[in-house]
Length: 225
Image 1 (cartoon, one colour):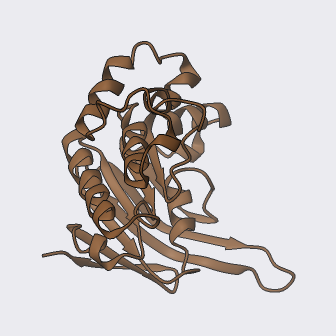
Image 2 (image 1 turned 90 degrees about the vertical axis):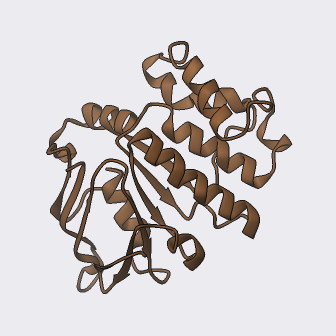
């Protein structure tokens, strides 16, 4: 199994009783599988995504990628694991305004000096997301949907095991949201990566084969049709 999250718990200290956000969340995904997570604001959706992405550590429970617990790694090795194996897509695209579409796509490769080796892949990904004519454009010259397409290509550049997307269509109009949502599903399946999307959009969630509602700190699952 590619991704196994078991009994994830996350609490934060307060002056009184610790604030519990997650209370034993479970999630399992294999390569090419996709899950949407829904829930009201403050339910812990982004917290769960941060734990899955190793951006934060659980208070209890475990996260394993192909049997490996990344939290047992030294900090430098954990950062390298995150860079290689996990791709992120956020509600705000977080593109560098001074860089071109091609340069932004290559940003995750700069840590290890692999931009030159990944150049052909970056061009191929941008062609697959429909931006082959925009390689030299800067973010200010793109529409919101086009910026998110760059973000999708950037997330996939290192051929990660999993893509984590936090409200990836939240700032888009209905047409662009449908296009970006479909693109995420299509690209991750083609790449053999697992996909986890946090969303408030019932329309986007309905397209996923797995849907989960985060309630009282736990995931309640149902299968899509």
